[in-house]
Image (cartoon, rainbow, N blue to C red; front, side, top):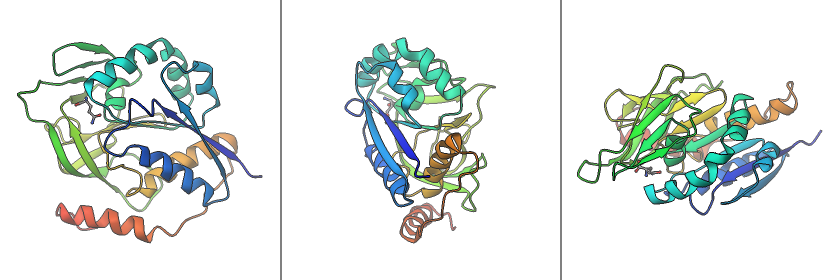
Length: 252
Ligand code: GLN
């Protein structure tokens, strides 16, 4: 049976910096290369929460503090719907500002509190313009099982916010080289049910095909438990992955 995967792209106009739109292209291509139909649903400011229930994978990119505030006013009223979808195990990728937003709150660079969705047990504090931003390439070791022999993730980070995980959420990965969540505790990102928060832009998915396939496989198996995802030739993607890791002194 030819399944259709609907990829919900949250706030493409406001939450999409440092190439995060590339994650949508990767998800779409890696579905169609396997004969799956892939539809991208743009969930712009003011979208109806019932559209969330038609999505099989969700992706939300990063943004500057200003855009995050605008989006928070729009998404907070839809918190219940998004929370129920995440709790149901619908896979999602939430990058940087989007990741911060899933937590309890984000204290922005001006000290203003942006209320979070309280779905991930974490909080973020931006210490302000005088503190250095956490910027650069990032190489990490995945802390969760994504059914892949490749256990590293590489990306690019650029954030002022420092994220601190609570007890009810696991870190996505351990920092091997770079800053990660806060530049202190060597954690990067967060993982809860099948939703992934990360500081890795780049975009993250082109150089981490195993993470892309984890999201697609979760979506597919929510439709058909016995579905399998045929392997693809990821030579190019893995060469790019290894090149970044090598540049950061990590041999894979
Ligand atoms: N505005 C947030 C911060 O600086 C997130 C930035 C981003 O999404 N790259 O921490």
